[in-house]
Length: 281
Image (cartoon, rainbow, N blue to C red; front, top):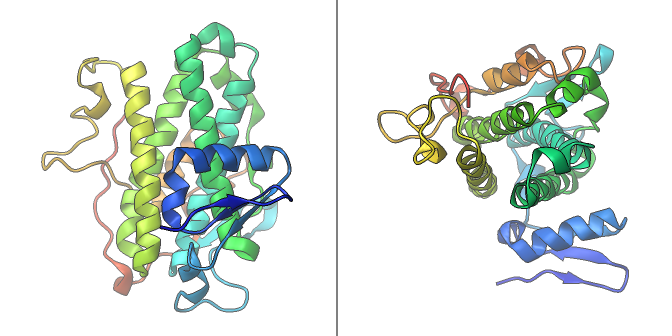
């Protein structure tokens, strides 16, 4: 089993994808990034992206549009992960704003504050892991497109924060569930599986903390509204996931919506299927 190390220059070295989900690695990842240190991913952690069929020198995925929006080409693994990177940026920014808000200590008790702080830290890990792994093909910082008016309205109440948090986590689960069948390299599917399992635990914790309206507190962590008749978890195709983000008005100028998908996955990558997503996650 490969191990991560830190050298005298305060660089965290991650040797394999398994380390991403280890608590000690996550804590060190956040600490090193916060101190301005470096994170090094050894070859093989995300190597499939550089060998994905159809990738040219400039790559495919997200490219700048007029007005600062992005386009997503989903015909390759790297394009799919660039979309995931965009959503992880928004999640990390949201939780950072929650933890840093003036009312954080008023709205939430000590245990709840610990949960939100952990959520922030893990989403930062996800964001930075993807940014480092994608390298020159990483999505530029999209946090400048966040609608501060909408964000401040969400942060003004406990229910607003909890509702937005549940939405983000369910989008993480459903979006990755929808994307999995399109990934062409098994190594990338493994990484996506690790991400989605963590997002699902986040969603369960939040629903346990504050069940959606009409849900029993005893079963809300995996209620009937998020599990279908076959016991399967929620899923969304990429366009629907992006439209869910757009509907919150949290991102300005149409920077994220289904219209930003320039190319859908090809038939050889998988077949689109019906979306299933809770009305109020």
